[in-house]
Length: 249
Image 1: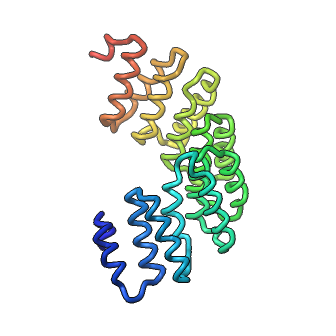
Image 2 (image 1 turned 90 degrees about the vertical axis):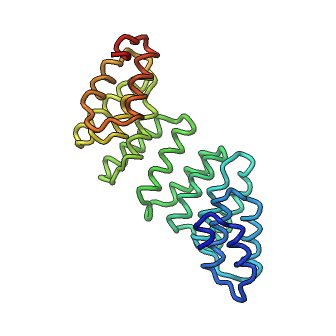
């Protein structure tokens, strides 16, 4: 209860005085400190959990993996990965999704790909989105677009995050045709009035090195549910392209 309310230190005081602690209580306190961003204490708790012989599961590792978001944590990520495999948790979806993201943020897209390639039989939408985000984070737009096309061919469910992620990688000239294809797909799927997706399209056209502000304006004008983000996106694009007169109308 304390951990969920953000009072992690209070939760820890209760935890430390518990006569018996099972994997649920250990996972809860680890998740609390992971949410607080305290990597040292989080992994200290993991060692304590191992020392007491408590069963480790996906709920133990997935919160800790979210903390491994820098190159300096690459070796630690590998160690956690090894422990996960040793415990037979390599097919736990929450764990390998977190591993893909951790490896990517630690600078190793190759390791992220390796995890993804080993999850063919048990991927979910988060797995695909995690790999998509990893490619884009490493400026591998070609691979990201190919992955997106794989999702399309396989008939996989694609959510708003999927579309906004791939659209965000299509603002350079060499990706202009892909951006147009994505826009056409959004219309085909009847998603042009999903605000977050249309806002991503507006930003894509506005940031494009080609003269695409007319396209950005068309998307904006056809969007029924405009919010502050979509307004800011179109106004910023108009100003940056020198279309200030339209921006002030």
